[in-house]
Length: 191
Image 1 (cartoon, rainbow, N blue to C red):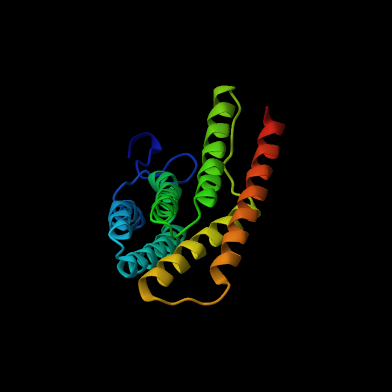
Image 2 (cartoon, rainbow, N blue to C red):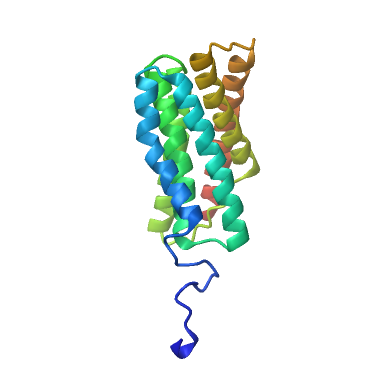
């Protein structure tokens, strides 16, 4: 290639290729969002639970593949977007049909909106923002995924383990509040 330019990698080492298997899997997860919403609204929670589990497996697979093949610029943008779209849409839809508390859904969506708005504000102020999830945020994501999975499984397969959902609801609320506060504190130091 002329001038030593490799069209398949950026300066940061991430590939500029679009049609990689990890990206295809991630795009598939994004396409699963409206299907999952439709299934839950129809109260086909068993199929929605299976779809949600498959989305989780493809998330793990595309992450593993991306680590082996090297990340792509598109993948680093699409992967967290796919995760957020699926989780947020499931929280809203499950709350809409009364399977998750509305207050918890508002809390989860507000926290995500606050983080996105804070990043936008910092960038508007000319601050460079490195987006690295905190450990509490990772715990919050695991708790949210588990809560959605358990809720779908309970509704779809009539499985009702005692105390699991109430404990998960409490854990999601607690980690949402703590992680939201941690991001606000981190952001305030950058202003």
